[in-house]
Amino acid sequence: MRAALQLAASREDGPLKAEAIADAQDISIADVIRIVDGPLVSLRGVRPPELSYTGPAESLLPLWIALRSNVREILEGVSLADVASAQLPAEVSALSHAPGAWVDP
Image (tube, helix red, strand yellow):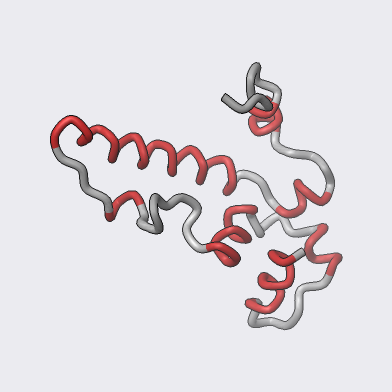
């Protein structure tokens, strides 16, 4: 709800109506998260490209970039309309059905 309110407030063409959310193929979940919380992925408040590591930890930077890329791919591939209709893209549904997906390590 908070995300929808902030998204509605940020629109230049007037308030966002409930019908627009249900038909919102062009509003991704990534868009909503960026409006509400800022960057999709950050470490200690820093975006991955702004990080630097040296020595044995140097390979962490490409790891964080890869993580961000995958988070972006998933969240940009799901729209508000997908969520409103309870019809997530097949790739996302498949990830949620993977063994261990619902288990905390």
